[in-house]
Image 1 (cartoon, helix red, strand yellow):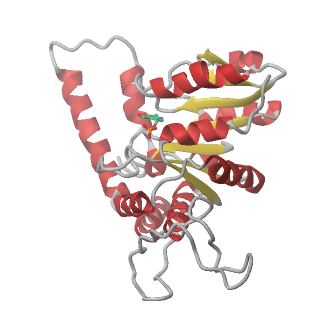
Image 2 (cartoon, rainbow, N blue to C red):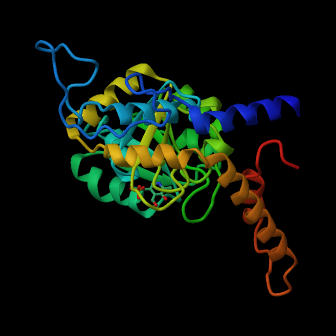
Length: 297
Ligand SMILES: Cc1ncc(COP(=O)(O)O)c(C=O)c1O
């Protein structure tokens, strides 16, 4: 219990301060919004770490450091939307590669796999990944990645991240986990063995419905370098203003998620006792249990 409390305090603190330090020029404690597209160079290639904002931007760098700290990763790469994050990951694959995808994913994610990437020879199979023995059989010689959302949008299906990570490791493929719904406040897939975490930060991470953005977080330095290359080369980057708004939204992630869980628990208990509501499967109660705030009763 003591450890849970300490871990929770640590996470709460990271939501507010993760990856952030006062601005060295002004001492501003809030990350400045650096709108400049171009940065001065004292000589060819000599600069303070940034030359052009598609390649790198100070406000974006701070957001990426904060997101990496929240997911327990070492690198975060941010994008102009969750769909841009997904597409950028898939751009690491090549024609002939295959992805094993959970049988319930956000419709836009399905569209990227089934309508966009298919044209470039990247195939995908949508399977119920709750049966681990079947997952093992479903991995093909050309499979490069297992892709899940957990809980899923829209059915709130839950997958066993640690078990899937073990299969991914055994088969030498990546495990990508879309953590948009649970957020790192409730589940940290990298600690369970996932290769990368994907977010539509448009949703709970920001929490104010006033921006669209996405992110990938990993502990794999080589993968991060490849994703930073795609981020720069393809250019689906978030604006510095949206990076600032997202940093601001993250400062309340812990309290918002705590309240979401309390409200969901309250509604679930109310529905359970409602005379006109019939329990048809165990899915609803499993979904609620899976999102209980760590350390709560
Ligand atoms: C689970 C999940 N992943 C990814 C996305 C795509 O994110 P975006 O709308 O930011 O492109 C969504 C959007 O609803 C989503 O719900």
